[in-house]
Length: 535
Image 1 (cartoon, one colour):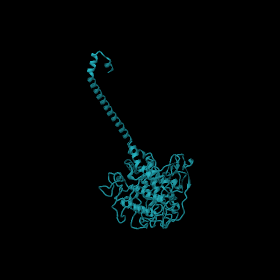
Image 2 (cartoon, rainbow, N blue to C red):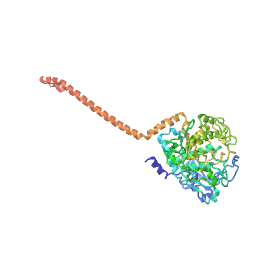
Image 3 (cartoon, one colour):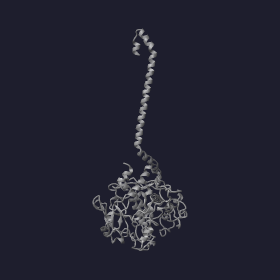
Image 4 (cartoon, helix red, strand yellow):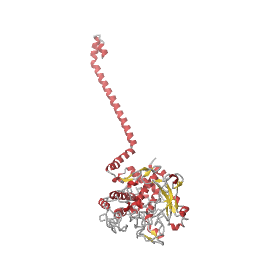
């Protein structure tokens, strides 16, 4: 069966995992605020009969936030997830999921007792089949509706205390686009265009790196469940010292269209993609949330941006300078922070000096602006699949910093960070729940690694030996057939040579008999038969 046909059937058979669980979007659940679904494995709430978890009250941190958001009780995300649910499944051991039916990152098996360490690879070191598979998986996720999760299309105050739910279906890929929009959207204060823009639960402060780490892990997990390929990992784009968009080819993330420089080449599958959540000003004016409706084609025009804002892409020296910063957060722990590793890596501070800058987008931010399209707007940036490659590499730099400086968890702020960024705050809008500080740790504890961070022996196996073995595995039938054909040809040639040698030997023998014939005659004339018989 061909890969496209196989993926077509898989999409009807495999569940998705993320955001608002479908069982928790009913009026009864919203009124009770109890999101504790039954695990189908044993028919009990949260898999309690199997010891997987229990339905428990949600306790949120009451430590103070920073001054950036002065309001209270106006936004559904302020004490996530209490506006929607005050009870959820609390999973035990290595179990995870909204019903405790999954395994924690880095574990697998029926009882989630087996460890797994996956390796994320440079996209340019993927084999041809791996690249094609990655593109196919992306497109499958874009076109497959999530059977387990929905997105919210209105604020809770519009739902009549839960009596009139406002949820809608979404594809697996667009679910993650919507999540990135929802976590970074402006707060609606009431009235057309009346918003508070200085609020973001995943950017411009401490949670930027842990939040995106969990985001990528969940996305990776979703693709594995969707396709059944549990060896899948997100590739990364190492953009250090790049002069242009190296991944913008039709074999990878789509070249520039020859008809319109703002569009993707018609030869790429991404040219048919439609974006969502790309019009935040319109939503604010209408006092609505993004509802996941398609809003036009994917836009990208790399390099044709404002050069004053992004003079160049980051260099190897820039990355090294950022890694040398020893403090994770400083000062107000926002975009004004000086000598903060997080702020410098995110791109609000100079990599050379560590001092906050205005009017320029550096490091992480520079790639978004450089793409000059859908990826350049924070709320809609995940529409472009290059987002995944880019943030995987950002995550790897975060990992380098953790390994180099080995900071204790106390280095992560517990209080006074902008709202949503303290250690004990639950990440918006994840259900199941994840605390920011729990992911201020190495990737090895989470079951994955980056190829270029492995030790030399592991890198040799991963980057050089493994690709050849994978290619050999893919063509072993051809190799076997070639070997059998070669053996057959060799056998035929050997037979021909053997027959020819025998014929030649026979002719030589016949010639020898002719030379000795007079002796035979002589023997007969002499009446002796002994020589002839012996001969």
